[in-house]
Length: 160
Image (cartoon, rainbow, N blue to C red; front, side):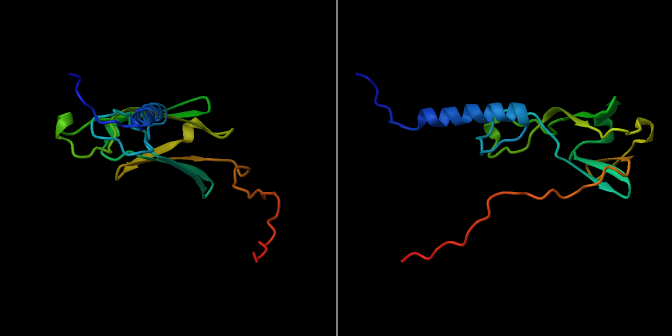
């Protein structure tokens, strides 16, 4: 006699979602849905922010849990590379997890620097899990607002 199994009409859709999450995690380092512990291993990708302040381009990378010795910075031409590895601190078996949202692994971020950046004048510091990289930039590199044009919205007519 054949065993009875629970009919799950969305099983294929769930499997497809997990596969898509795995691919997004592999390529972008971030997951867009909750994943069960141990279901997916993804690499760590530090968040980056950059801005211009006092004539300097400032780039910050969040690397919690890392030490300066775990991070390598380099410049080749006009490309800044931030490379490192976030290692798991404790050995935990897959079945012991209740929830796992933290990512571990090697990472590499490459950022194109503005023209005229002098690699000899780039400075970097590390404090509280944040790498801060500063470099002087030309006065032409300033943010400017760009007006967004599009159809204007007419006020909605009241329905009767």
